[in-house]
Structures are given as structure tokens and as C-alpha cells.
Image 1 (cartoon, rainbow, N blue to C red):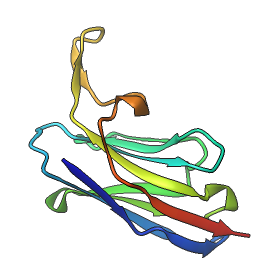
Image 2 (image 1 turned 90 degrees about the horizontal axis):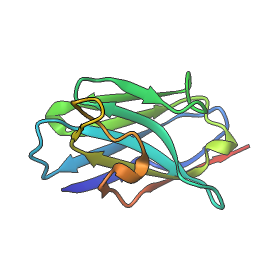
Image 3 (image 1 turned 180 degrees about the vertical axis):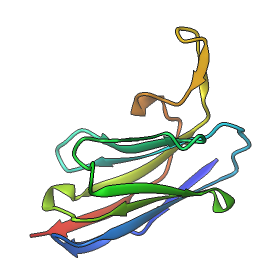
Image 4 (image 1 turned 120 degrees about the vertical axis):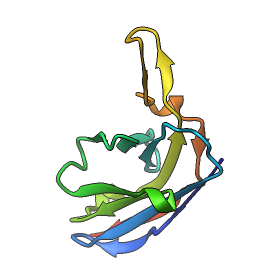
Length: 130
């Protein structure tokens, strides 16, 4: 499985960017994907996660400004980032994994924590200047 991000760059505050994440080589019927980011000196945090039923979860810091969308035919996850702020500056990573069985809920689910994802891209840098 290969995960490749693109679309990062430098923008001024208030601007927009669209990140793309292409996943190839996966044969899973259930697919979970997510965007995470890590700023210098900070821990990596979840930006958004989405499963193959299109259930989406956004991090609190990006709600109302960022939107995730998928193109299943292209195996691509997009992150539309609007109203960017300097604090959005970070390396953005895409991750993918199949759903796994959780005996506690007797059902399959997507990763709940980033450390449950096994497949990661190299990241794409986003820099927002004030």
C-alpha cells in the first residue's frame, strides 16, 4: 500500500489550499483514511478521518474551515482548507487502514487513534503567513 500526499504550499492568512491523498495498492473492502498534522515542537493531531461509509470526524480546531471529500474512482481523499490561519502551519500527513474487528462492540470500525493507522504518506508542508 502506498500513500502519497500533494498540494501543500505557502499561503497568506485567510487563503485556501487543497491537499490530495492518493492511496494505491490496497485490496481492502473497508477503507479508512485520515489527515493528520504536526507543527514544529507539537504532537501530531488529527485533522479529519473518514470511512468508506463517508462518516467524517473533524478535529475541533478545523471545524467549519476544512472539508474532506473523496473520489472513490481515483482512490483519492481531498482536504479543502479555507480561512487558513498561521496556526495551521504544519506538515500534513495522510493515513489509511482497513477497518478492524473490535470485540468490545462486536463490529468492525476505523482506527480511533492515529497510532492505529499502519499506512502513512511522507507528508506535505503547509505554511500560512500572517
